[in-house]
Length: 90
Image (cartoon, rainbow, N blue to C red; front, side, top):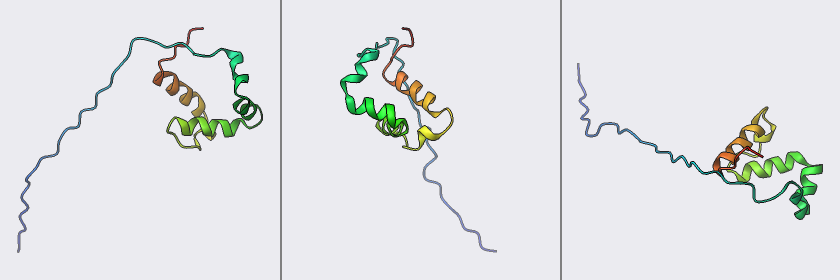
């Protein structure tokens, strides 16, 4: 019977991930009616909301198919609010 010996020269390493939590929140920089300042976005959101959802998802680094999954737009909205520290209080 032949034995094959393997020498282990390095052990698996632990990867540490750190997160930074910011206590400050940021308010919206535009008002509700400011959407009319960019007519292209306004028209796209009115007549082709699925295309606008795909664009927002891609701008946030997600797949353009994300808006078609149930509940995914709520999760995307929450993720964007968290990323930019936007508060929910009005």
